[in-house]
Length: 201
Length: 201
DNA sequence: TCAAAACGTTAACAAAAGATAAGAAAAAGC
DNA sequence: GCTTTTTCTTATCTTTTGTTAACGTTTTGA
Image (cartoon, rainbow over the protein chains, first blue to last red):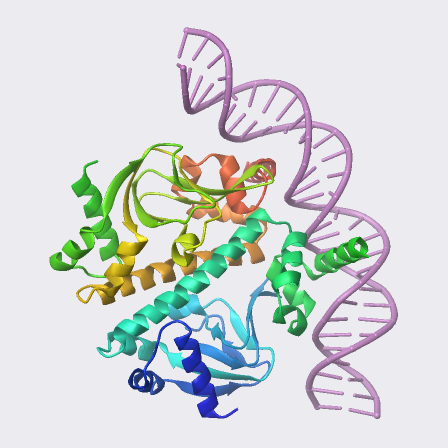
């Protein structure tokens, strides 16, 4: 995928939140960087401050942290989704998790400093503020739903819901990662799958 | 508590995110409403669109939803914390949860329409966008931490962490609500407490 | 191509959590 | 002040999950 296509994808993503005219786009695009992230390479690592926010143009990444020597996968990002150790990016503190490419990825990134410059820009500062607000609000709602699922649903119910709405996740992600994502062990997920098969059979 | 004090608290809250001069404050304050919410009264109910966002100036509220006839408590807001069925407020869709006063509350609220007017205001639009962005980012991080706790920690570990950092919650909230908040049943929390007591004794 | 690693399932056992019920203590409301 | 409700604990039993290990299959990578 060429640079222009990648940037165009980024523009479309921004425009799904706020309208952007050509002049505004120029101001924004001048700060963007297009790059590749090969499978198994890391976008973020614990102990390091995440200095970039990105968009996954192609590919998929996995968020995980290591506890007691075990990798625990918390999240994934696919095409047209945000890519960042967001807490670290926002707070300027060292992050806690790895972000690793599950496939060869094409990404478009924006540095923290560029972001602040854009916020303070007279031409597009307000629009960038709004864009970031809408992004944050969007992901806030996602997290709210996820917390709600942990509180109100059993692991089996959470997996069933994932079967309905999961889409890409179920096809492209190994099941033991999905187990972590659901808050259970891979063995437990395997048992849940067998239970469901028996019922639906 | 009088209206001026309540408004002053709101101003201080805003100023903990962005600086506000007197002129800007006038523009904002003209849209604010100060009100009381008596114990057990509802700020939001399922099926209704949440048209206001608020600040708890005094008191505490509980967020809960009803599943299979059971109340499940997901969250609390105390003094100087945000108050809203945020997903409903943002998406303009009917909410799913109740927000109920646990104590007699004093609250300051801002309507959705006023919020949009403020965003589009030339004088303080950009500042309001930034304020809301920072608010959303702040709560996004809170939710991220909470999801992370569900994935990486056992209920016992989550309770222990709450003992360290909980503050108000543990003093002012009945334990069966806290159990829900931790994602377990009240009976289970009681057992966890006994296990911890035995160890530390 | 071939050895090594990763992946998913299953089994056996231990630990924890859910469901239900009962009882005591504390708080709320009249 | 007294009754009712709420809150918390405890016990019993069932269900689920975690842990560890084994096994076959698939995928990876040199």
